[in-house]
Length: 445
Ligand code: PXG
Image: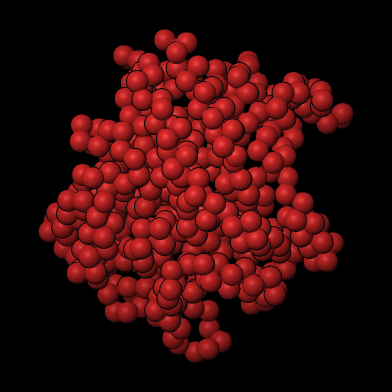
């Protein structure tokens, strides 16, 4: 299965031109790790190995790879209509996808704006929140509240409300008028929690501190990942999201759940909002929306937010925002086929059913060398290792390389191994992922 890694007319093996994202470019180009094909639960690497995908690509390929139904839908769409302008024009699939997403969103959240990525979904949501208050005569509400350790993509809005310092510190002062809640990670109290940790609901009260400091009349919204993914899988403490919802309600602050990772089944329901039974005002999503096949993101709003924009003359634009590729026909075709697959194969329900097995398997790594915490929900787990003194992230990176060498692809962030396999994963594959990580932990220094 040796496939060429470049096309015939390209300069063979020239890796110089491509500036890779969130990657150690120099290390990679010395020791490339190329993927050339994907099917079901596996990638094929350029040297012909089968790699078990323990990360659903990057948290997005929820129904597994190479799904014929999606392929056929995208093929048919590109043959029928390759592109349609989204401003002042429409095409049927855009309305269909929105209606389908609305159907699985929390009740009363039935208005959907489309973007091309999670980052754009976040920036769109933040802009909608600010504009919403202005339209209602509360134009002083412009402040954005994020949370320490949060990840909301790489736009200036998302970077500003994000709380991972390496993603922020290179880029100057970012947006004005942003503040952050404390994060919820508490190893001393919550290590090795299964599902939602017991301690930390009171951390939501940190929002009251920010309200006291800035005054509610200056705050537009709070954005959090209901389960923080990128920072290394932080499951919300019991009662935390409930408390956050109450405080937002008390002060007229919009609550945004960034569900780019948690959307479309990852935690065992359509959205984390459903799983945790908390209805935010806005949900951002992407990734699983098209099963990772064609870029697409979405912003799901409460009907009342959409209604607030529906004023002025009917011919006039209500929201001065959108993208050339908003609701791109190929993305819409991919999304409809993906949503069909999720439903036909009951993948959200399957995730919930598999959760106890997955939980038991990952927690069997307790006591393995370097491990200081294991946490999980749905088909997500974080395995936290102690950092090597003076070299944060290096042990994690070494683990990543070794796990990959053994034919399993995890996601590693800092010194935390994050697992989020496609929701079609079988029990023996879960065992293999965990065994491989166990072997690597025992050989790691
Ligand atoms: N919000 C959240 C919660 C995300 O997880 C984004 C926004 C940005 O989405 P786009 O489509 O613009 O990348 C994300 C993306 C990882 C990892 O493993 C996570 C993401 C992306 C890449 C890697 O930590 N999440």
